[in-house]
Amino acid sequence: MEFDYDLFVIGAGSGGVRASRISSSLGAKVAIAEEFRVGGTCVIRGCVPKKLLVYASHFSEDFEDAAAYGWTVGETSHSWETLIQNKDKEIDRLNRIYHGILDNNNVTLFEARATIVDKNTVRVGDKTVTAKYILIATGGWPVMPDVPGIEHAISSNEALHLEEFPKRIIVVGGGYIAVEFAGIFNGLGAEVTQLYRSTQILRGFDSDVQNFLADEIQKKGINLRTHSNPAKIEKTDSGLKVTLEDGDVIETDAIMYATGRKPNTDNLGLENVGVELKENGAVKVSPGSQTNVDNIYAVGDVTDRLSLTPVAIHEGMAFAETVFGNRPSAADHENVPSAVFSQPQVGTVGLTEAEAREKFGEVDIYKSEFRPMKMTLTGGTEKAFVKLIVDQKTDIVVGVHIVGGDAAEIIQSVGIALKCKATKTQFDATVGVHPSLAEEIVTMREKFVAA
Ligand code: NDP
Image (cartoon, rainbow, N blue to C red):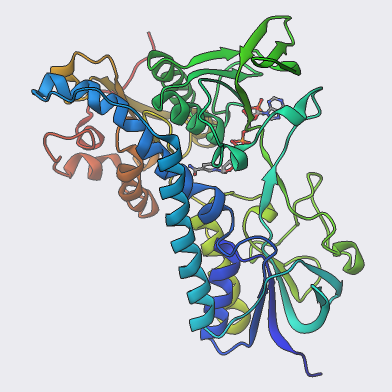
């Protein structure tokens, strides 16, 4: 049977665009549909604009530290409007680049919402097209819990476009997005209260990292309140009144929820073909990203495996190689390095101590907590933390966790070592780069023994 396309991709984010480009280069006739802007969450309203705001928010501290290094900085002020305008210009530029990628690879773009009609038919805008394969790459969207007055709250989407910079803001949640945005607003001068409903932020991270980061962000001025959650939000003449579950009341100018993201699978027509979903609405896939319908695949956040852009890209490439390159492959979800752009940053790869103990039984722990060199002149109290987890039987390093400046940059290379199953002996045989934070990774010799 003849189809209009070999592949129809729904969603032009990181995973969808990469899958389209590679499939096309392997000879497939490809179309892609995007209902918002080409580029997806990471480029348009996620990693990229967020990181630009993180850069912006670091300056306040740099200005303060500068004095100890002999600089007179003088009066400083910040224009949120300029920052947002410049950030938007950069996002527009990247959006054009993504359009260019599709054009240059002969991928037909439909700027409309697509829904699945049957296993080979897609309705896109007012057109109906057929395809041999369909790839779902629709990503996710912020979840706003059902709290009275939630309509007054924003998500990270709106935080990137606020017309006015809030003097006071509450950030709800303890995950990646909450800690990153709490740091951004704090650095730019807002009075930040971060509310987390349970015991410690960054659930799922190594517990030393959780505790260390919680201490550091509080030292920087974020009012972190654990076991706290809003019960209702009311608009007042002077801003918002947020009543917590424990009865406390906080007056604020804005409240941002970062309470998780939901896979975009509603009203996609998946029920028309019987694509199976997980309980949380994510598309169920095999390691090779195939759904239970043999010609329909899914990659990226919509599958709720590891919601990270580079992972979606790997999944998209593996899909293209498998289906159009005749090289069956699957993205590898082991030892994926990742970073939280909190202040200070967190970089992590491999297992947490708890996971390693569960998996290997006996593990050796190496930990180091120290004052970064930059702080020696400033008298700053910021500290850095490095932790290595080693499987005792094989000497293989199975987890590395860093909190400190440039942790994101450092952990990328450490990720290669873990992929190569490097041993602690090999870490030790590596000469350090001095003076640097990273040298700590290869100079720790004393096993940590709990007191
Ligand atoms: P997360 O799932 O990481 O965190 C959600 C947070 O909200 C948790 O602290 C959770 O608490 C809390 N929460 C959930 N529901 C409620 C509720 N009803 N009321 C109050 N609190 C609630 O989601 P994020 O939105 O932060 O990020 C989504 C994903 O995006 C991340 O998992 C990550 O994969 C990706 N991401 C990656 C980044 C990076 O690589 N730097 C940056 C940003 C996002 P609890 O712990 O109790 O469940």
